[in-house]
Image 1 (tube, one colour):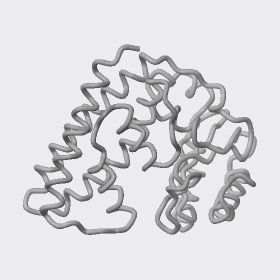
Image 2 (cartoon, one colour; image 1 turned 60 degrees about the vertical axis):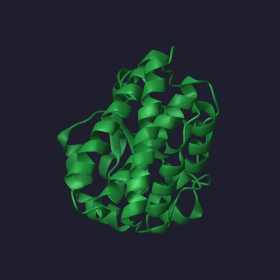
Image 3 (cartoon, one colour; image 1 turned 120 degrees about the vertical axis):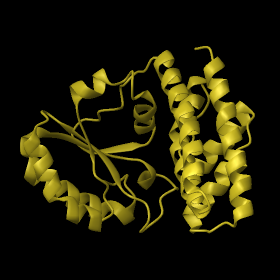
Length: 243
């Protein structure tokens, strides 16, 4: 707990105490992941994300956690990801992007560290990145059309896209054997240098979320075009990447 930022320690401890009481010996580890461990954390806005490793998965575990949902929400603790050791090992080929991110940014506060010694095949991570990027382009097109005349809805689509792209960019930097920053803006800067793409639109969308800004229609249109062009370019780069 000493390596967890002071602002979230009480919330995590209360959550962990309830987990220990409710799950007992079936609970093997609790790991904090994500922005609550980095400089991207926004008090009273960012969620606290965790991964729980259980000995066995069963419906009773879900019922126990469901009874904790209200107290979790009050403390900004997101619904945890529930896994077993076997699930983690069998999922490295399909969730390499997520597990790489967990491996980079995590603190295990109870039990053995489930991510420290994981290894990944570059071909699996590259394929996942390509798939996710191309799916992201589809969601951008659909989101823009669905927004119709309500251009402010495009803001939410762009914010979600910018947020979801950060783990993918870290994975691409890993594929290219480059340093993976923990903070989002540093990731964007790193990707801009390594991939020779323009990340200003993505940085702008992130700023909208952090500062709760409401851009005008002209800014939205310009940013959408920039973000779409950047992701399209990155998708091509990943498609052609040899690993």
